[in-house]
Image 1 (cartoon, one colour):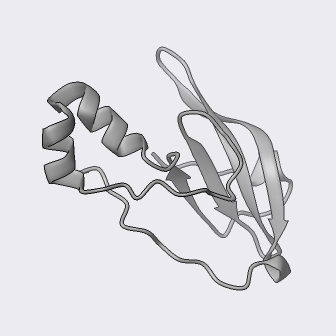
Image 2 (cartoon, rainbow, N blue to C red):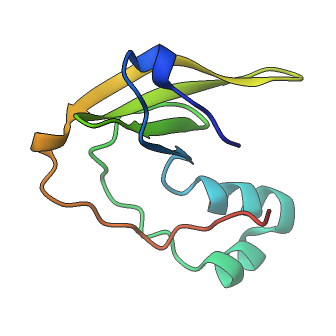
Length: 107
C-alpha cells in the first residue's frame, strides 16, 4: 500500500515504506500454517532487542530531506490510513542502516 505522509509530517516526503514489527511475518505464518511450516519457509527470526519503538501491527517510515519519521497506520474494516507520528529522527543522527532478511509479500 502506498501512502503520502507529507501532510501529517509537515514536509515533503521523499520516500516511504510500510513496516511490520520484528517477527510479525513468522507469527502470522505460524498461526495459519503451523510453526514447522513457518520455520521452513521463513527460517529463524533471530529475535533480538530492537531500538525501534513499539507501534502495533504496522507503521509507515517516511523519509524527508531532513528526517526519518515513523507514522502509525490505522486499519479499519474498509480503510487503511496514516494516523499519528510516533517518532522523528534527524538524518544527521543516522550513521548507517541495515536491511535484515525480512519477508516481502507478493504483489
